Image 1 (cartoon, each protein chain N blue to C red):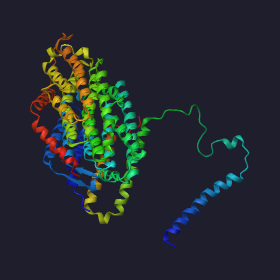
Image 2: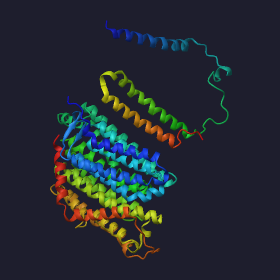
Image 3: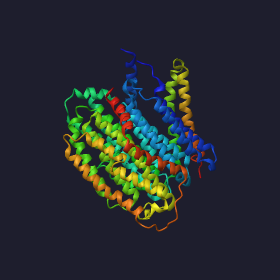
Image 4: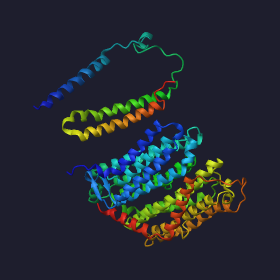
Length: 476
Length: 117
């Protein structure tokens, strides 16, 4: 057996050290200078991302397949760190007003660590460990405003449903282990290919779909999403919407496409129906929403449906579509939620009607919200269009009906996305005082907007990177 | 007979010794109840008022901290047994592990989890 090489875990160790370091510094430094912790977390994550880039192309298995290092995992890790860094950059002012900076930032970092472990997990135990690390950190973050009933209620709902979905997932995993005698995903795939499909295996797959369906908030496992998204502090909501969801998709791909080949092909119809129902439900229920966070929550359910489309074909192209969409969804989400965060910070409201005349009060905020929403709706030339194109391209043969549903529902979604734009641009503001943006927020917004525009117009380079990453998925 | 058979016999005898007493006394003891027999016996005083009182959450924090360091010994014990052969690397690893736990204790202390207010 090869000796264990700790340098393979450099990224995870660095992120863990950063999280601990932020927590310790929070104990040492006086209250007045704790806003520096946000900058430390931000630049720390950027630095670790630099290290991650240098690890590109390092593809191997550790501990006989328990931990997989490949471009696929690395791409996800960079996505997670990027979204964490952007969330931190966009919410510093908000966190300063809330207090508890050290806990807040270190929990975001630990959640990121959990996601990174999930992306690399090669066996069920590591996978579950990463998932729980992420979930527990998120539970703490969701009820961070512990004096507010809504936040505590959201935390309570999240802890119950996260626990339930983890239990269901764990039951599915233990059934798989019982059937194959192995917890290592690649070995499971080899053993399961030789076995006939038994009812127990079907039950295991159903449990896995249900357990992970909760995490990605696919219909009919979405009930917790709007309440939790509304009650959680807005930056946490945005991190939940992109980070937690992206990490769950990373293991969803790993579990089903790498772990259950041959079985998964029989399930594509189920996934296609799940995706269709999720897209239809998310978009239709988003229409009557009057609270911006709830609207974004339902829109994120619909987005999960679009991403699920990439799983239908279970090919490299599908994986590529999922990764591409998840990456650009980070920027659209960061844009929309940072606007919502700062708007709440200034006005104390998340209601859509209070967004009236935002274009006069802060042109940048209104513009970013518009770009983010149009990107989510999939309007060319924004990034969301390219992402949807890659996703739906994979299913044109055989699942044309799903393409049509996606198309029609995208048009429906334009209605409620543009309603926000209409309120922001047409209506007169009740309080016309201009909103002054602090520079970190402005930088976050500009980054989100520029990246969304650039990927939309010039998707080539990112597409190639994602191709390379998706290519390593089948290497093990 | 292997050495382990002795352990097995010891286990069986221990079980019989423990369970036998309880079973025998259950079979032969006289069943006559009186108020004195139903009282608490050497386990404290009779309760007053409702027993469904709420406990302070501080108990929970203490319990949590206790469990952390209790579980730590599970890892320390095999490490200590194999200390000679594991070498410096494992020593440093264990120091990092304990350091992380101590940070947790430090955090809890500083945040007032150990204060009884």
